[in-house]
Amino acid sequence: MTLKPRPLLCASLATLAAGCGGLNMQLVDRSVQKPSNIAVYFTVDTTRGDPVADLTPDDFRIYEDDRPVSLYESRQTILQPEVVAARYALLLVDMSGSVVSSPEINRLVEAAVNFSKRVGSFQKVAVYAFDGSPHITPIVGFGAPSVETAINSLAWYRPKDPSTNLNGAVVEAIKVLGHQLDHASAPLRFGTLVVFTDGTDHAGRVKDQVLREAVAEAPVDVYAIAVGGEVNASEVRAIGRSGTFTSKDPQDIARGFEEIARRIEGFTRRYYLLSYCSPARAGHHQVEIQAVKGGLSGRLSYDFKADGFGPNCDPNQKPAFDVHHPRVLRTSRREGK
Image (cartoon, rainbow, N blue to C red):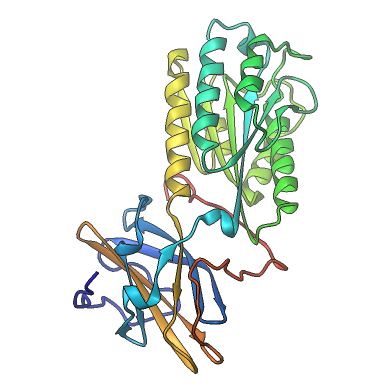
């Protein structure tokens, strides 16, 4: 690829520079290691906040100290994010008496299966059920190969308590997801909780304020799908910090799962792990990465030290992110932000 002249920058260089021509790039983490490997983990959104997916290495241009780095010399590539990031999704399904006795139970099971297939292509999915009991019930663990079979078994699920312990279930699910993230081996960790319910909390085991505090403090994304005649919109919003779908029409169950799955996929695929071989061999340098796609552009920049750099770099080498100080991150932003 022939590098085109650089577009005019809209602001002075900074450690974290937001996009200037329609794209907003945010640095998450970076790796600098010998022989001359640079890897950058970042997000790309439009300035309107929409996630930008499916960018290729050709959509990025790299500059060191304001000079373009040849695509062929740098051998820049996009690595699979699983190299440095672990992603887990917990689907929490309301199986209270009103759900299991509903004629829409098969519709719910089918929607949950399709959701798990889609989200499971880029996150390890677990499914838990809740009713009026004090604790949630595991249906299938994270990343298990039999997710579809396990979810189909919900069609014959019988609640231990027909009431709805919605607040308590969400609080406990956040803890379960947090425990899974704590024991992941990757240096960067992402968690997603998706809650389906057909109504409101009836059990009263956990107060609303406790629920709100747990959701607000959770280091994970939390989405809520609420479909049914008893849906309380304000209660759903309190749970779905990252996004919600609400409807009184039971036939909207599939649409709700599809919409939330699409949102999760978009926010997951906005992350890129760009790796390249630096031509620098000593001293401090400033890197600028530009994304250019469809007439839109954005950039981010940072500094690195190249002392001791040399030849024989492989851009596919695993980045050296700090595994001793792992970070749990949220993928999405708060809904409406």
